[in-house]
Image 1 (cartoon, rainbow, N blue to C red):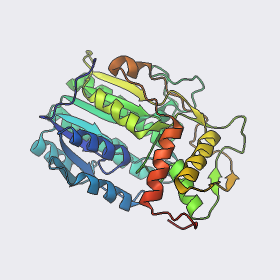
Image 2: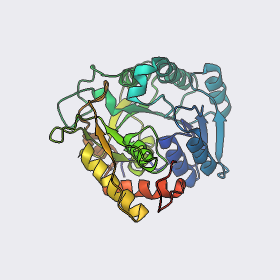
Image 3: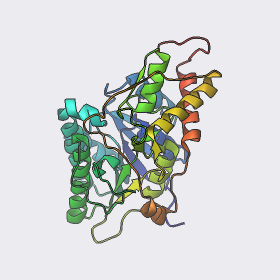
Image 4: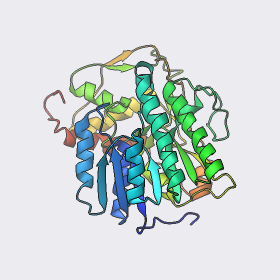
Length: 348
């Protein structure tokens, strides 16, 4: 084993705890007896009922403390660090979404830049064993070389969201250099699964189907040169984070960046066809989406493909859940959660 198991005697601060990854990570740590302080502003970027449903799953744990607050509120973050003295910080709070950043730039600067700066400052004045933070595969921009490696040039982001994530990596590196904060950035690749984000394509496609509406596919209807995505199942993401928590960087500048992706990109159309099959199985009847093809959107990239060599070398793990297995778990959860009826198309 080339990483340390989680230490239940330590306090773990998870920002974005009501979010998709934050919820599953919190659950995993709590199951192992860790003390978890969860922070989230529970904003309405997507259905807040889903965020509340996640939090309800965490509330029964005695060692879970939830604080509703925004990481861009410096005084709140400062007080939180002083009171709870976290040993490990996992910063997953961020304004997500590539397309949303084109219309709503302010919230990205507020949360992803100012919020992350506040976390770094808090770690500076309240030293931690390890700061783990969410970056994104979007930092690779429209890189043509695949698979994407952590050493690749990433100075050409194609969305403001990507720019903020690249900025996070630079800021973390600086703070690690100046104040010796052990920090690890995680470049996530298209995370999906049960209780996921409704703004993600697979979730939106399913919503549209049950609302009796067509789905929009932004690939120009070009099946030969279809978009490729490295879809990564939530359980794999959580295992990767869990293992990396126990492996803080020890270099002279204690800062590292890792890809967490499936290392197995799929055509978008293959992913959609697999989702149809999984929903068909969950519903016990054939499910076929009504498809409308449109031009690729600004900020979208043609392909994402993670090299996971560094991750595997560091912690002996690489994501391997197939889209068939992962999407079936999503489809089964969706049908149960939204109480979808077998006989009718209903609005959810």
